[in-house]
Length: 227
Image 1 (tube, rainbow, N blue to C red):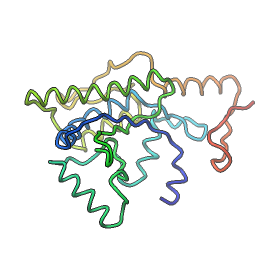
Image 2 (tube, rainbow, N blue to C red; image 1 turned 180 degrees about the vertical axis):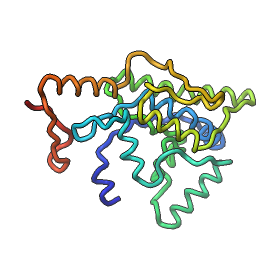
Image 3 (cartoon, rainbow, N blue to C red; image 1 turned 90 degrees about the vertical axis):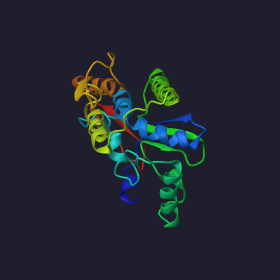
Image 4 (cartoon, one colour; image 1 turned 90 degrees about the horizontal axis):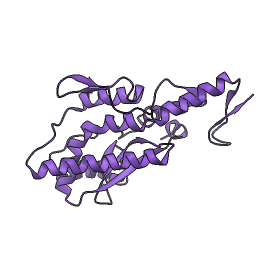
């Protein structure tokens, strides 16, 4: 990955939800994409980079998106179609195996799971548990709809990507677009995400007369405050 790998000092949270039937796994993959910006909006936790406020609630997404095979997944009509695409990459020598496809959500190449990968690492354990529970609950809801011969509408990556950017940029502060009726949903949570808390702590430290000092990744990871 050359210089991109040197910049990859980020941490994301991956949630695996078991889906035994490969056909159901792909069906759920196509539908769950719509909710990914909502998960990111709740899980934003990387507003700071090298000691400064980036203005983004999830700067990690920007860093990770520089790598290949990231972002929103393709829409596949079957698990076989997904396998054929992954096999083409392997046969061409581009990747060793399908786990080297790093989409926001993917069928895992080894385990019978859908792996949710869009969330930042939350700084509170309770928040991490909440995000994992929401991921599992959303898939359970979609599976229940499927049993009743109902499906969530599958929107294009173009539209879902706009919500993904809104979530990355401002968390839930500005709301996301409800593409079913073309409006933005604003009332999501009240206490603030990890990103909100980090920015508040950073701004308070600056107001108290502290300054941030970025330490080289070759020596140590992270940054510290000093007078």
